[in-house]
Length: 351
Image (tube, rainbow, N blue to C red):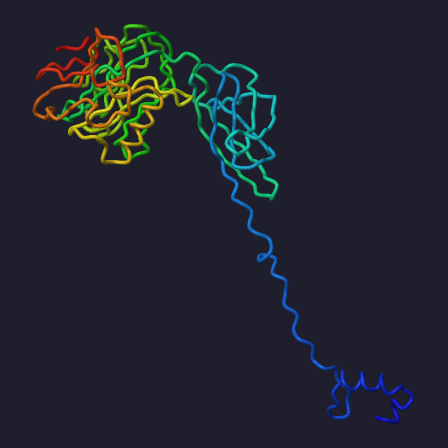
């Protein structure tokens, strides 16, 4: 080996010998430490999931699709039933909620509160594609002014609970939503289909369908329904099924398409300074901020300032009724319990 490398300087020979090992007459390179593979997951965090936040219709022809991050529209189809809707004016912009909104402008007005469907695909900057189909209602530009006027909170077959509305100013009921805070199914209990109503009309929302003769009266015939408590002079509307949707301790309110409160009241079987359930305390704060329900002194309303329903029993047919001849104040002073048997769904309230 020394003869083989005798021509090399001693310092170079030392480097070679230090980097090699001799085994069985062969030179082999000394082993290097293993190189660790680069794990990109340790350096590049996962992008946040792309979320769809909902559809709004601020005008009769404008449709807004909201997302959690900026997106590029890949495709969009709009339908009214089986008929496609044409649109234009597509653009996107950041919204005031930290998300991103896509806007489409319909080429024509579809009509108030019609059932529409959107099918769309979008992609964000990380390559995440979101594909969805969403039902929604077209804009109702003429919601009526109305008040909750009477309620029956107890079920006594074959008579169900109901919420009666009195129309103060005519318009279209379409897309108005009725909520009850005690209802576990998202609190929404009903959304009206489009129908014209006029000042002075009564609309009775029956909260159970108990008889085969029950008919929701969205047409011109107000005597079409035959279920108990139906009125031939009022518009009777029925919620399918037999689940209990209203209780003696509850908050009832109606929202328009912009989540504005049109009418509300709160009920309580017991007094007290504050509500014992999150649903009711949240509803009290929400209705107070909307100016729809408060204490007689203008403060936040607790059970002491709700309509007292302690004297309502299933066996005693009393309703919660509004003083129709008084100015509306948004407090429990607007309300009273009728005498036994004095329910009047679809007509003026009885004493």
